[in-house]
Image (cartoon, rainbow, N blue to C red; front, top):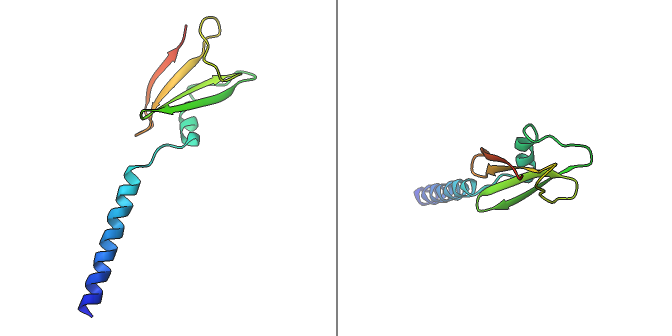
Length: 94
């Protein structure tokens, strides 16, 4: 009986360690990123949100065709940190 209790305790401990490692490697989903971006980055008629993920950061922008434009009608791009959802920058490409 003692051996079974020890084995069950060992298995439970191993499973809990595995679960904590999995939670450390989670990333924000696109839906979560857009929830962060929408209050700061409103859509204009005909636009949609676009996002890209690179090196631990998300870039989110609104555009009618997905491109990032400069000059008149320049596109504003938000950079959001994946680890905590913090907005790192808000840049308008002129």
